[in-house]
Length: 82
Image 1 (spheres, helix red, strand yellow):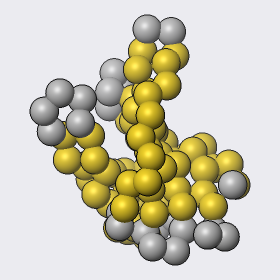
Image 2 (cartoon, rainbow, N blue to C red):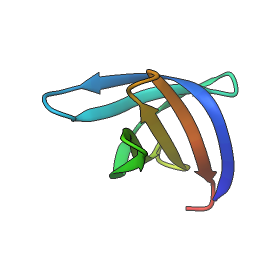
Image 3 (cartoon, rainbow, N blue to C red):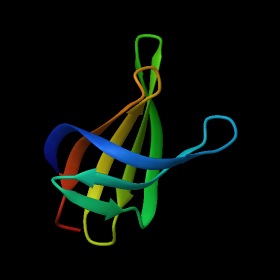
Image 4 (cartoon, one colour):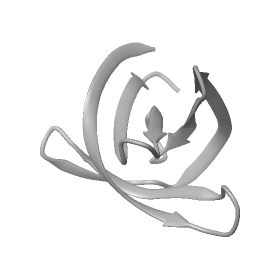
């Protein structure tokens, strides 16, 4: 995977409890639709929870993380060879 570590704009669904689902995001001037969320996990930064997702648009794998305290999304990494 290639490390990116860039802030991105995300459209997401927030369900009951801690259920968050990214639907699409904007990166490098393109809108990337989320076809499938392949993995979800929670990372801890002290007492702060960071919600992370591995997801695909059908041809590329992306790792996105959401910080609910800062209300910010980061594109962590991209894998183009699936």
